[in-house]
Length: 428
Image (cartoon, rainbow, N blue to C red):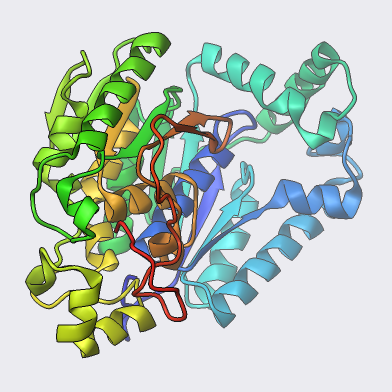
């Protein structure tokens, strides 16, 4: 978790842009990234409030700047902002205001209210100059929106184009020289930054620079069973067991059948990860950032040995597995911090990727990709000899799991260092 000092200033990230320009995609990516880093983050989508208050299936004329519905739309926008500011005041660190915000008057009102509440405001404008991308977004996402449920797809697209035209009548790009803003052109093709300040803003800009809207699958797996796994020992750099080698070949057979184009395999620098990927006939990259959590002085021990020889450490880890740091080693918090460059690389990667990692690392990557709470990371089920396939959707990933080789103990969420857990053998 990111530890906020007394001078930490809460942030509001205000989305700007015409409809179908990827604002919600960017908003959800930012929320996932900041939550994974430990910032208490929530997205407030004005469209969802509009559907709840005014009802879905509003015609394009509802969004006309001179229409009778303008006052209602502003009330809905300010109601959304009320809830956002209440969230920041009570418990949040970062709030994301997901709306078009195409008019200067609206942005000025939002800015003044957020500043009065003591929050730092960053405008994030999504501009799309590639009409093919806009068209694809229209057909893939907007026609399936709750606004068009049950409507013919072509009629829905035609209405949404008219809605865009209504917003274009008053759209004024962000150009205030005294404001803090980021402009994303074609979701990362070009990034313009103005007056960005502070650690959070700097990290956010770097993250946004690595985004793209391309769709490619990501596969996650732990290495095959190692000789330490057989003995229930943690850490070390042991070779694969016989079953681990079987899994490595099963993994290669799976991808030989799937034949994903331009697949790349990323491994840790440890031999059990490298050996698991060895039979794959694809380019491979070994990265130390993917190494297993450092067990420090407990490296090579069994959990039973830790319980008997280091009872205080055993109890401390059982009490708070996420924050617990092995003496001279790492915690899950530390693992998340060192995986940040991997996250950037995954976001910028345009080819499908197979990541062959370790238990703690696979959990942390899965938690980020699937938007799990940071403190849930140590409890994400990632059994041995299981391949997790993540297929991108409009705003997240669809998950499938494949058990490619049987294993006698795939128990994953309970282990002897969890309070109340039975004394079963466990693979970390």
